[in-house]
Amino acid sequence: MNDTEISRLVDRQRKAIIEARRRGPLALAATFVKLSGPGWLQGAITLGGGSLSSALYLGVLAGVGLLWLQPVAMFMGVVMLSAIAYVTLSTGERPLAAINRHISPVLGWAWLGAALIANIVWAMPQFSLAVAALQQNLAPGVFASAAVGEPGGKLFTGILVLMLCLGVVSLYNGGSVRGVRAFEIITKLMVGGVVLCFLGVVVRLALSGGLDVRSIWRGLVPGVQMWYQPSEYLAPLIAAAGAGA
Image 1 (cartoon, rainbow, N blue to C red):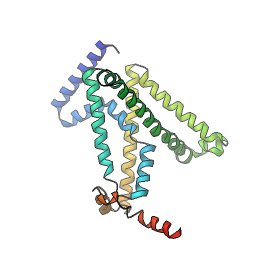
Image 2: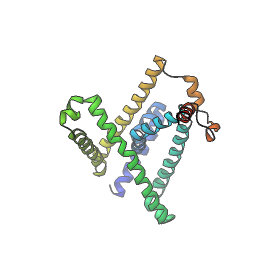
Image 3: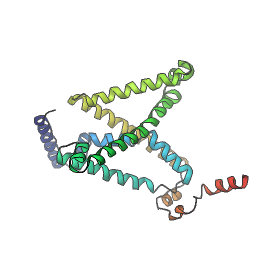
Image 4: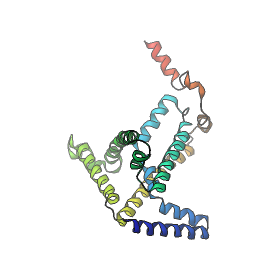
């Protein structure tokens, strides 16, 4: 898209927001959801196998004692992404170019390298999670290792997931408006599906009595004692290991 097309698109979006404000809060919220493609993309980045594995690991170490880290991490993520979005929208430059030009190329390329490494770390668990979902839940008769042949089961499923991901990403990188819209719709559906699944698990556990609500509320309060002593969930295991030695 050239500058003229971008300017026209921005004008249309501004008019849509103004019109939605006149119609009320629900219309305004629906308009923001429609126009918030990049935000949904960032949400998709932070939802997946990496988040699941890190949350499970913290749960093993401290139970619900480190729940307070979640809202803190969310707040830090919102601040960082808001700053990047503000710089990008204000200057019209990509973040890397803006950092290299106005601050330091060393900082810019270091930031890019750290972001690349972080994305690799976050992306790798997605493949194992997708393979497990296909082989164990969605279509075990088709994608199971025994059905495809060992060890080709995981390889075949992984290549299929990779091709699917490349196809979705190509919609965004193709440069067409329809491709970007299709990409945003797919991203919104995926993020919405993940959130609904998480919510469904919480509701199911709450109805079955599997949630200790009092402990959960206590976990949202930072525990200073964890700086110098293990959590109440980990202390018995450490004591048992010491006794066995």
